[in-house]
Image 1 (cartoon, rainbow, N blue to C red):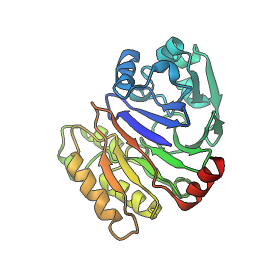
Image 2 (spheres, one colour; image 1 turned 90 degrees about the horizontal axis):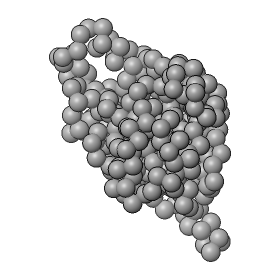
Image 3 (cartoon, rainbow, N blue to C red; image 1 turned 45 degrees about the horizontal axis):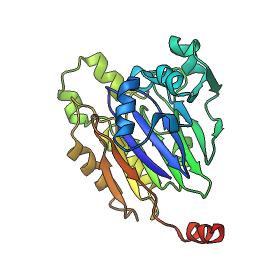
Length: 269
């Protein structure tokens, strides 16, 4: 499975998953035209997208979902709570699911995992392809509970929120109510919290940790990478740590080749 982050942050989020010609988009937080441009930058046509899965109803994750699904015939999936909380989704052709459900696509399945955030039914996504590759997409959450950490085991690629540096948040421009929301248990992960999650789920075959949803006001890519790299230092992680930007497409991020997958590919050939 290959992963591209089309952009991530408060102005929009979208992640593309690809395996054996099947493409699934997680979130569409950009207008349809911007999505088209970002996909074109990696030579992906909008018509080639099989489905769009929305993680929650906040505008920076769902802004372009309905228009893009209508324009290019994407199957649109969202949790029941997400649909109820976002009026445009109620009028769209949406396939609803309950948090915890697993969605089946041509060459991959996407498991939804309930997460704590100030939305109606937000989910993280664990994608597994048909040869066992696993990708986790985990952003917009206040903390990672035990169930989520278990679900993040044995990943090849982890897209993980590192929203803010705690010191920068305290000294930043936001009023106290907003700072409290961001730092709260239904808010966003700090760099320190992201480092803790990465350390807990790290293993030798984890190829990439891609930090997402960095705050423009209260974080810096070098701070986020340094914090998470320090957290991973005591582990057996030998992959790379990246910070995905708001205004550029990054990827593809791909798994390391594991011995079992090599043997399976040989048998298929």
